[in-house]
Image 1 (cartoon, helix red, strand yellow):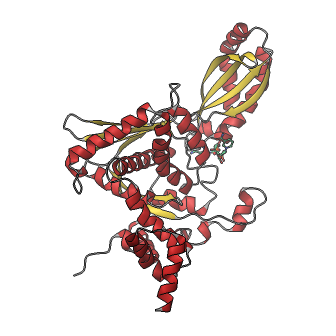
Image 2 (cartoon, protein in one colour):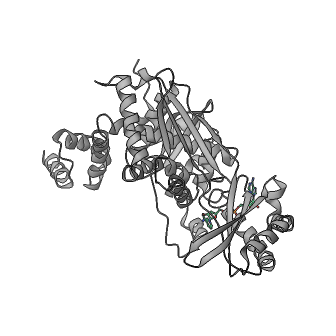
Image 3 (cartoon, rainbow, N blue to C red):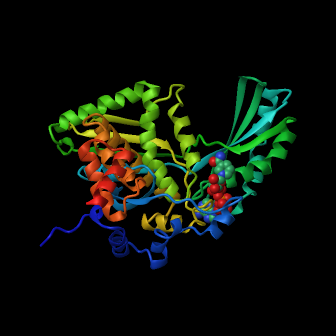
Length: 425
Ligand code: NAD
C-alpha cells in the first residue's frame, strides 16, 4: 500500500478535506479559507475607509503543535516562504520533548493620561492618590460589560517624567483588565471618561489619553525542551546543533544589530497568527520591540540554554495584546474560523499559542542559521515564487522550480527561458 500522503504533499482540496475531517468547522467556515480571503469587498467597506477591494495573503496551517498537552492546528497568514514549514518542523522536534508549555499572565493593559501644566506636582500626586477610589469608580462606569465579566479598572499609578522637552510632567497610568479583548477601545474610552476628573484634581491639563502598546502587564511565556538526540541531522550531532544554537542566540543577546533580526524571526511566526486571527499586528510588534529594549539595551526576546540532562531548553516571553472579541476578530469571517479551528476559548489561549509559534520559529531560524544556513531551504521555496512570477502554469511550477534549483540559477530570466524551451519541445 502506498504511504499516506503528508499534509504538505496534498493539494488544496485535499488539505481542506483534512480540516473537514479533523475539525468542527462547517462548510461555510471552511469556505472562508478559499474565497476572496474570506472577506467580501462589501464587508471590507464596513471595516475601514475608502475601500476599493480586499488584499489576499496566503493562509497555511502549521502542524505538530502540542501546547499545554493539547494538539493545535495553527493557521498562519504570511507571504514569506519557509515560515509555515519551519514552524511545523520545529513543532515536531518539540513534540519529542513533550510539546510547548505556555502561560499568559493577567490580561491587563495600561492606559496613559498625560497631565501637563501642573503647578505643584508632588501636591497633585498626593491629591490623585487620595482620590484613587473616586477615579476607579468613575473609570469602572466606562465599560460595564467589562466589569460584569470580572475585568475593568484594577489599579492606578502615577509617574513623573523628568527632564522632558516640556520639563517635568505627570503621567497617570490606569491598569485595566480587558479580559478577552485586545482592549484599545475599552482603555481609550475609560481614559476619556476620567480625564476631566483628573484635570479637576490636579489643576492641570490632560493632553493625551491613550493605551500603551508596551503591554508589560500582559506577558505571555512559552517554553520547550528538545531532547538533544532529536537535534542531530546530516553531519551534525545533537550536541553540536544544540551548542551552535546557543552560540547563535548569545550573539543576539549581546548585539542589537543581530537581536533585531533574531526578533524579526520570532515575529515571522507571531505576526502570522496575529494576522490570521484578525488581531492588530502593529500593536503586537510595537509591544515586542519596546519590551526587547526594556533594559535600555535592545536584546533578544528569547533565551536558549542547556538543561541538566544536556537537552536544549528555550523560552520566549513577550507582551501579547491579542483578543478574541472586538476589533476585526469577530467581523472577519476567516478570523472567526481561524479561532474556532484552534479551539481558542479565551484571549489567553490565543496568546499562549502565538508565543509558542514565536518560539518554534526562533528555533527554526537559529537551527538553520547555525548549521547549513537558511538559503538552501529558502531558495527551493523562492524558486517556486520565481516560477509563478515567470508565468509558469500551475502544473509546471514544481518542475520549473526544481530545474532552477538544480541549475543554481533562480532568476526570472532563466525561468522564462526554460519555459520557452519547454514550449518548443
Ligand atoms: P472593542 O472595543 O471592539 O471590543 C471590546 C469590548 O467588547 C469591551 O469593551 C467589552 O465591552 C466587550 N466585550 C464583550 N465580551 C467581552 C469579553 N469576553 N472580554 C472583553 N470584552 C468583552 O475592541 P478593543 O479590544 O477594545 O479594541 C481593539 C481595537 O482597537 C483594534 O481594532 C485595534 O486595532 C484598535 N486600536 C488600537 C490602538 C493601539 O494599539 N494603540 C489604538 C486605537 C485603536
